[in-house]
Length: 433
Image (cartoon, rainbow, N blue to C red; front, side, top):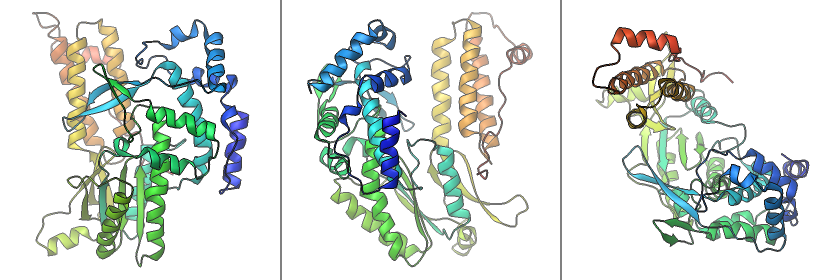
């Protein structure tokens, strides 16, 4: 963070009600160069196909021209290139890929906006925030369920959150603490830039496209003012325990009493309607969950409590190793597990004829990435199953490199040891602070 932006951040922390009227000038040569340096040159390119390496050929001239356009207010972001990637449910998720120069400006704007709004966000918000991760979110959720009075869980899903946020709503939320018309105009231009899909230009009064550098902080701001603060007001008048845990467009609400859970659900549906949003009813559920859920299930003739999925994990009621205390445990969700295996199958099938060293190097990265995320307390069985599935697919497709089988199991085991593939290990202690 540059010194000037750090100062903005400090003011925002010390004076929560401060309104910033002159900050557009912070998008200068120094900040844009800083943003250029931070951007990954291996990411997909936008419509103009310009890579970071290509942009760097005349870097000083390009940045100076960009500064000039920003000063004269003549800069206009280009439409983003839309690409579709498969989701776990078989549907497609659209990502907006901006031109490289637009990414530089987006990152500069993000730094400024984030410096102002980050100090305002509450501790129960975790998505796309500095020094906060999915694992931090899961740790917080564990504490809310095990150490507080959680008896009911509302697993809430907002339908198409990123695609359906009103631009007017975004701008109103920004104007709470930003009155610099030049910066607000620039942000609005990004929202209105639109996308190109199959040669067709599409624009709308709604949505902040996923894949955009600026989108996560804008979505968090709307979530904070639209939902989080609303729930905070509910908490003040509740007779029992109420908490919301938010990660981007996903949220879990914990309740002590069922009637308050049902009432809050109704209130939130009405609140979302005001925001021109709605719950995905097929994905939103209120379930009994907590230290008394198992006992109550037996009374009601059920075999075991219901589970819920959050951040790629299925959460279920269980006991500690000695059987004396309640524990919430988690494992890789079936949906995510199948998705990850399918992704690897597609990849190895397409790349099986590449040099063996390159294949193994990529497999190592994929395994390490999977273990780093899914290797958390209580999930050893599922990461071992993933490891087994990956190795099996690797054997299968390497043996199809020629008509004669290249490896038997014994030979493959020897090769695995030689290349030192990582073994499944628990990487994250969910109870470590």
